[in-house]
Picture 1 (cartoon, protein in one colour):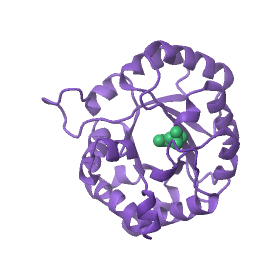
Picture 2: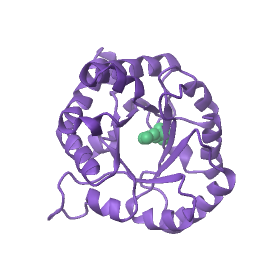
Picture 3: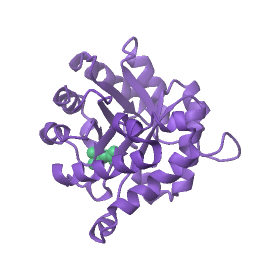
Picture 4: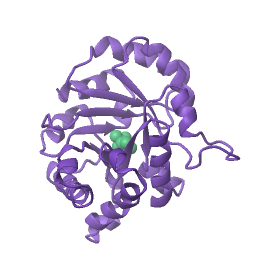
Length: 255
Ligand code: PGA
């Protein structure tokens, strides 16, 4: 990993971790991971577990708290949804936008994802934009087109200064939760394509500085190899982040 970019290891807990499990986890993780000046560690707990996360984190504000999703409107009659401002007021600092489970299970369109990213930024949260192709799209040779189609509306929607500080997560859909990981070569190639799209839109300097994380079945045994690939600046971890020890091991692999 080059230090030009911010290295990040992030945990996406999805629909796991009740508030009491969250308290227990954070205490256990904090005892296993002292923090490191050269690595940013972030967690995306379910929104209802955010207060428990913050309480258990106590003075360990190196453990960043984020939300998994927000609604694309500022507020209103949207039963079950939360707004970016609510997330910010509850103590979140970062927010995911466009996770593939949101895109595929809930039907989030690229345009909705762009508006969600904008709401996050307006509320003062740092958006983490997730992009990635399905197996059919990869086999049809559409990787580059899919990455551009998912990133483009977001770059258009955001103020250039915000767009310039976006964090990206490349997560091939076929590797998420399947135990199948992209090979270091495939992941490196996708990161390079995404970075070149960012460069074409935002300029070379922004592209060189953009952190692009890899996600999709990252485990303690494959994290170091993925992280050693040029252009992979961190990882977004789902199932292997649910155990404090395995997530701490991934953090150690990143420093
Ligand atoms: P996984 O999930 O590590 O369980 O594949 C990754 C993600 O969805 O962010």
